[in-house]
Length: 302
Length: 251
Image (tube, helix red, strand yellow):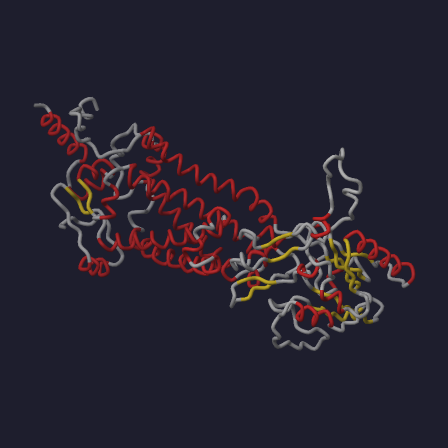
């Protein structure tokens, strides 16, 4: 992607105006589409994720469901969440949802992170953790409305899905997409994926009787770069706790960008103000003041 | 050393044993201000305050203070050490609270002092109010600010230390702000504290370094304490010294 952008000419010497075709390239924002209605829970994406990202294998936890472990871990970024959902008419539905970083357009982890350059949002929409700069304060954990960042107490750094930014940068799809056997996972530009998702939701509504079928792309975080097709978009919570209205704590948005620098400057100017106080008023000295070196006595007229 | 303490401290045994470790020389014309125990406590608290402050700076605005983190062994170690420095700061300050709680209690005279604060800060009143005892109202204000700050640090710091996985995202998001505001208010207080005790009121630094202050310092800034310790009237003592100085300065 990046190289294609680099080769794209904007202006050519000797020509007036911009070169033909400039700005015609399609939106570079990438997106992963997860169609929960066609996921069979095979866990191929989980394995592919660990393979590509070279994550160490560690013991899984069996909790009597078709879920590999209760939740994602620092060394396990991609988990098919399983829920046996009972419909009002008594029928049972097995819901499988691929749980991973949502790559929000307005990332709460990035808003909460105090470290310089530890969390990066690329122009293509991928939100990535740069562990080199991570200080391990875990504020991102509290900033994320999807409960995604995971702390590794040994390295004292936080990890999560990278949307395989190393693959995407080379024009490849993420590892999970490549492994998916049903075509439930798709990858492309945000516009394309949104279009396919809406078409699929329409199909589910019109042809399969899922009246509430819809696309999950929460606007409360500016939209996400991982979107879902759900049988019932009115209740995403049933899909392993997908929040209906994900929110970033206001303290992060307001505090970090407004009060923090303002108060920091305030403290700095406070120090300068003190020096000004000394310049204007001088010290308060023990009385009576001793005579000055030039012989004048400050106490005579006191 | 015969100075009767204006303060009956909580732990005379500890103070006496510290007197055997270090000592305070009080020359003629001077008064004992802070015994060794108080001084050791003060500087221990100050040490951990600054360690917590500088590691805290590095976490507060890394783009401005990232030059601090290598001193503490990198970002992760800075983050790891910060709460330990903070706990040590609060721990030692707790002893200072026990040490100082009596002279730090707020009185009606302190409220009067605060109403008069403008005349004091602008230097219009060269002598402090005759009601001012061992500590003036400004010092008491800082003391209680640090007490409140420490309580906030313990509560919010515990939440931040354990993290969102233990206390929930909302608790962490709120604690983060409260922790920072508390630190900035305390930092402002410390700026004033350092200024007043060094170049703002010369002679004050000696009280925490050597433990002794001149009598003139005592009757100027803490007249009621001077009266309590020496039994003499501070105003009279001042007039006497002034007369002596004026007669001495005339050839």
